[in-house]
Amino acid sequence: MIRSAEDRMTWVCTREPPTARLRLTDSPSSRAMLDGGWWPTSRDPVVELCSLVTALTARRGVIERIMLQPAAWDRHPCRIGVDGAVVRVGWFSTLGAALVIVTGPRDLRIDLAVIAPETTDAVATAAMLAASRPANTTRAADILFIPPSPHSRRLAGHGDDVAVWETEGGHVQLDRRSTAPART
Image (cartoon, rainbow, N blue to C red; front, side, top):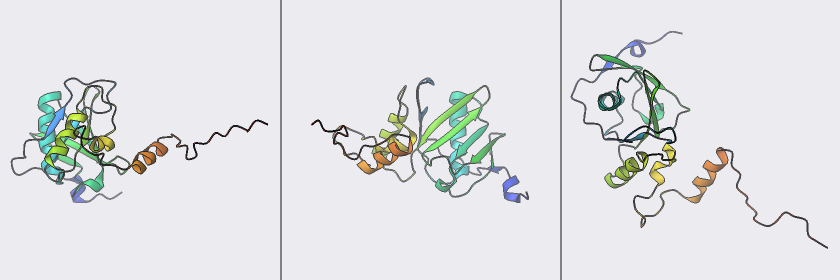
């Protein structure tokens, strides 16, 4: 397999990256689906991942690898240089766009819900709070569908819930009538 020069490059952010908009659980839980939420300011992975790695390194330790979904980002670097260290970036089309997986030494794994940069402040804040709740059981793809307050409407329609349930192995009973034989 011939690799391009771009594939072999280590990308480095040439300007000061923005402060990461990140909210993490206080302590990692083995029962939680997510370890927090991340709201990037753009779709430039070099700038955004540099700020994310810097913030996570300060809170959780050394970061070695990041896994992302390629369709959600403008370009796809394989390595990023952050503070003299190289972080490998893997692009997986099977990974949801709303999830980033960060790994490091000694079984360090951080699963973060990714909130799209164009999301409004109120919705993004609510999503990051939901993702950082201890022992949360909400999947990253569903985080934005959690209403920010009891008075707000659900952002997703019922059909979306049915589709998720069906693809996870559940079965929706379309006809609620009893299938038991009639007594005579």
